[in-house]
Length: 188
Image (cartoon, rainbow, N blue to C red; front, top):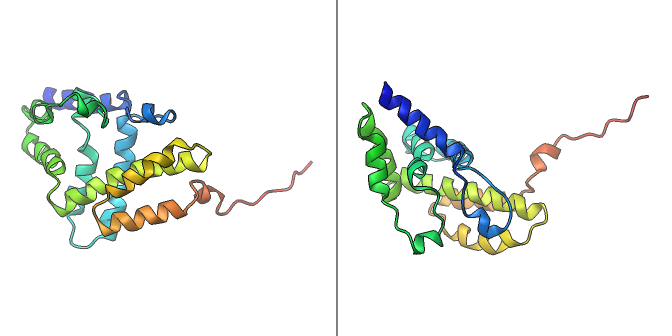
C-alpha cells in the first residue's frame, strides 16, 4: 500500500504544477490537475458520442495522460525545442512498484503513441480542453488567444473532436449560465 500512497501523492502534486503555455498567452492560469479534470470530462462526453469505443480506457487515458508531468513538469512547445523529457523513464518510475503498474503504464504509453481510436479521441479531449480555455478568454475580451486558436484547432484528429470544436466556437462561454436567467424585481 505504501507504493499506492506514493502514487496518490504524486497525482496530487499535479494540483501544484502550473500549465506553462499560459505564460505565452500573457493571461489565464490552470494547474495540470485542473486541465486533467476537464480533459477527463470531455473524454466521458466523447465516449457517449462515439460508437465502438472502450469508454473506460478512453476516460482512464484522459485521466492519466499528464501524470508524468508530476515528475517532468509541463513543458510547452518552446520548452520542447530545448529540453527533451524522458517521459518513458517517468512512466516507468511511477508505475514500477504498483500491483496495477503495467495497466497504468499501458494507458500512458497508449496515449503517447497515439495509434488507437481511444488515444486519438483522448488527444482530441486534451485539445478541446485548451480550446474551451481559449474561447473563454476570447469571449471575455482578450485578443492574444485568437493567435493560438488556429493552431490548436488543426491538432484535432477525429470527426467528433472537430464537431465539438465547431460547436464550442459558436457558443458563448457563459451561455449555459444565462440560458434560464430571469431578472427578478427587487422586493422591498
